[in-house]
Each structure stands twice: as C-alpha cells, then as structure tokens.
Image (cartoon, rainbow, N blue to C red):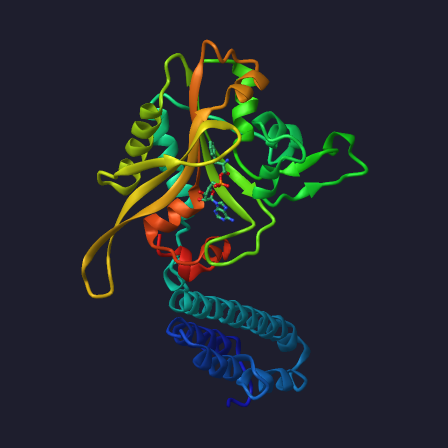
Amino acid sequence: MPENVTPQQLAETHEQALREFNSINDLESLKTFASETVGKKSNLGNWFAQLKTLDVETKKELGPKLQAFKNYWEQACMTAQQEIETAILNEKLKSDFIDVSQSYPARKGAMHPLSQVQRHIEKIFTGMGFEIADGPEVETEWHNFDALNVPENHPARDMQDTFFVNSTKDESLKNSVLRTQTSNIQIRKMLEKGAPVRIIAPGRVYRNEDVDATHDAMFYQVEGLVVDENISVSHLKGTLETMLSAVFAKTMKVRIRPGYFPFVEPGLEVDIWWEYTDKNGNEKGRWLEFCGAGMVHPNVLRNSNVDPEKYSGFAFGFGLTRLVMMKYGIEDIRLLASNKREFLQQF
Ligand code: FA5
C-alpha cells in the first residue's frame, strides 16, 4: 500500500479493476472482487484514511475522485450481483420446469354406456323415420295411468310401485307421480300431434323398488309408438328386430307371446334369442324377456283424441338399462349409477 495515494495510482487501480471485473461471472468471485476493491479492508479504505493527513489542495483534488471511484464500483458490483442472480434464477427455472401436461396425463372423459346406447338407438330409429319425443318425469296420474286405460283402483296400478308427489305448496303438482313408465309420452304426443305418429321416447322412470342386481328405483326405458292406418303386429316385430340387430351388430331373433298391459290389446311380451358361451366353453342360447308391447288399446287412442276406427298402432316399452347390461355383460345394475371410474373406463 503506497504511503500517499495519487490520482495516477487511483486511475491505474481503476483500470486494473475494470480488467478483473470483466472476467467475473459468479457470485463468489464478485464478492471477493467487491471486498478487495471497495470493502473495508481494501486499498480504498486506507486511502480515505490517508486523506486526513494530506494538505487541503490535494484533499480537494483527491477526495471527490476517491468518492467517485467508490460510487462507481459499489454500483457496478451491485448491478453485476443482480445480473448474476437473475441468470442463476433463469437457469434454475429452465431446469426445474414442470410440464404439467406430461407429468399428469390428461384423463379423457367418455360417454356413459347408457348414453352411448341411447344415442345409437336414436340414430337407428330416426333412420327409420321416427321422431325423438320427450316429456315430464313428474307426471300427472292421468297421463301416467288413467289415460293409459289404468283407472284408479285398477289392480294394474299396483304392478308399478309408484312414488307419489304430494306438494301442498304447488297446486300443479297435486295428483302427480314420478312417472313409472315412458308410456305417458304416448298420450302426450298423440294429444299434441294427432295421428299418424311415429316416435320413440327414451328417458328416466322411477319405481319404489327394492334395489338389487337387476332392479333399480330409477332406470331408463325407451317407449316406441307407431299409429297410422293398417298397422299390424308384424310391423312391431320387424321394427324391434331391426333395432336389436343394429344394437348387437348381428341378426337377432325375436319371439312374441301374449302378455298383459291395460293400454294394449292384444298385449304382448317380446323375447329375444340370447346366445352365450357357458362356463365349459359350450355355445348356448335361450329366450330372454326383452319388453312389453302390443297394439294400442282403442281407449288409449280415444283418450288421445285419435279415431280408433281409422287408426291402429303398436307400442312397446323396453328397459334401456337392461339392454345396456345385456350388451356389455354388466351383472349388477347398480354399477351404472355408481360413478366408479374403474367401471366407467371400460366403455
Ligand atoms: C312397462 O313399463 C310398460 N310401460 C311397457 C309397455 C309399453 C308395454 C308399451 C306395452 C306397450 P314393464 O313394467 O314390464 O312395462 O317395464 C318395461 C321394462 O322396464 C322391463 O321389461 C324391464 O326391462 C325394465 N324394468 C322394469 N322394472 C325395472 C327395474 N326396477 N329396474 C330396471 N329395469 C326395469
């Protein structure tokens, strides 16, 4: 350390510092440089101390220069520190970058099997010239029973355990039920459009059932109704065979036998021939109950303002939920409303 600092020495120190400074690119070196250039133990500290011992003129000349040197390097070190820290941070951000879409593969949603089959069925029927109809699930007893030839106290009302809606607040809900069948749409559509009519009506129905593997308290039905001149049972059979063959993607056999529903005459039960492989690997087949159907009862046509002398029609109502179970081999109906991902992912 020189005895007395001179402006020339200061200029040389500055030049020297500049050269060193330009090669610094890490925090450790910068810290050492700052300490040696403007720190307490640097030459600068001693030079400031020497100022007191100098004459006034030299003091005047050297004082501001020392101060400028100090300011310059303090500022330069601070700026360099910020630059290095920013570079380190950017580097870190680059290497720590998490591609969220890669770490958590997006789980694609899928359509519920019930909706898939419903849409397929809607396509099949619209292809045959049917319209898709809809109606209320909270229904008047008249639409759900009376108009369908099931008067009050008729034993057939007991065939479908009913949820009654008793609202003391809403007059319009008096004598209402949660519809037990989609057959209410037969009445609504004929009253609205008259004849001829060709519709299917898929939707939810409700029954006060003891829930088990094959019965739920809410399930889906699809109603079918064709009313026109000269409609016969063979139209019904052909329609259901066409629909079932498209759903199962192979020719399906249908059998018709007598059944009882108050709103059809004759009433029919439709069975389908079900082929399966048994536990021993043998190909087997048996008749399975598929749905209720029949020729629309003249009383139902009359209740819907359609002339039974001129028009006849067929109607059917099948359990869409049961059809989905058959198609996919689902053994417990409760799985369909379980919202279980392991189950739903299979479709
Ligand atoms: C009816 O509901 C009649 N409306 C069908 C009908 C329409 C007949 C038009 C004549 C003319 P049924 O109560 O049998 O019929 O029910 C029809 C179908 O719904 C059944 O074949 C069955 O597949 C399904 N089903 C009935 N109860 C349940 C239940 N608790 N859970 C799931 N599916 C059911």
